[in-house]
Length: 337
Image 1 (cartoon, rainbow, N blue to C red):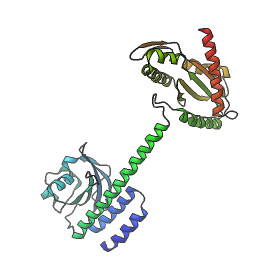
Image 2: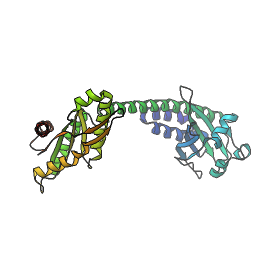
Image 3: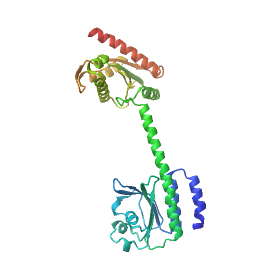
Image 4: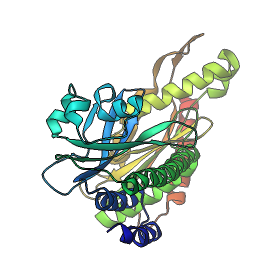
């Protein structure tokens, strides 16, 4: 069967697109060339002191379960590595005190470590049997070869994961206001578009509040820009506390925020819906703020609230209407104060 391994290996490396797919193919071939009933790949976390079975192939009675995690200090792999015994067909004699070997019924055991390019230990490639079995020179060669191949693919897999994480972080950064952690303008417009589409499907309206923080320039001038930043963060936290499921909250920039959500088209009148949102978020912003270096008793913000039909208005038009309503509110508040 060993003569068929090379063309099978070449085909597997050419056709398999995932790390798991390649490993499973190699485990199957490793079973053929070693004639051992279980082959498996482990991953080792030295910081946590844990070894886990990533993938396994069990052809007979012995079962090496995938997902099994065991303390690294009590594993055959660690002993084989430290004692430089990559193979034995008498585990009971070689490691008589191994509880793991007894539990799994391992009589024959072979393993080789998998090192990445930076020299770190990734894991081990292993083969085992419940019966004493010899391991030929070719079997040992293939064990080493497959370990090297897995190391290359593991390195590639880690690189892909790092790139995906970096890309995810970049997307998050590009859609997040760095000060408050809320949606930024780009994310707001994207989420508003999604919300409008949802409202069109469900036959609902959009209720939208445009919030402008009255006196924010004076807060910066009197208390300093660091205190102003703390104030904005706390504004975001207070608005977040008043959200309902499905609501959208974001910071447009400067001292402007937006809250939007779905509203039923029947029942309450437009004025009732807008007044309800006004009453829900307006009081949240009024009151005492601890800015660290100073204290502030804030009188609240100018808020313009509108309800629009998503079949008639676009997100941009809704924003413009809410902005205009906010300026009406600001004028009224100035006259009142």
